Structure formats: C-alpha cells, structure tokens
Length: 72
Image 1 (cartoon, one colour):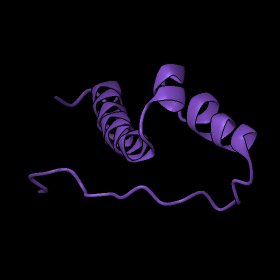
Image 2: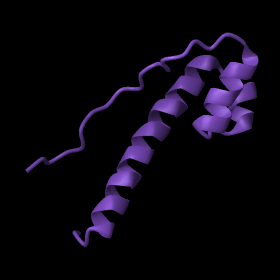
Image 3: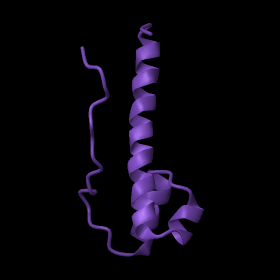
Image 4: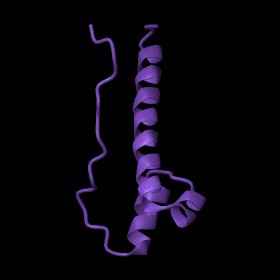
C-alpha cells in the first residue's frame, strides 16, 4: 500500500510556444491559470503556480475517483 502520493513533475508541452498568444492559450485557457497572474506575475512565480495547480488537480482527481468507486 502506498502511503503518499506519487511525485510528478510538470513537463513542458510537446509543442513549441512561439508567441504571447501561444503562452496565453496554454497557461490561461488550457491550464486555467488566472489571467491576472499570467499578465502581472513574474514568470518564475507563474511556473510555481502551474506546478502547485497540477499537484492539486492530481489530488482532486484521485479523491473524486476514490469516492466514485465507494472507497474512503
């Protein structure tokens, strides 16, 4: 039995982000990062938000799947 969640890292997209429209589409529209963070935060902060959001999304999906299967 695993006692902690599997560690995962953000991997860069398999496509090349060439201009601001590509970055906006990927971060705001696909990853659902708040628009204010995209436009006004430092890029390193933005990457940290993406990493934390991905970890949260993974945990939430695990809980929803577990609950759907009737396990607690």
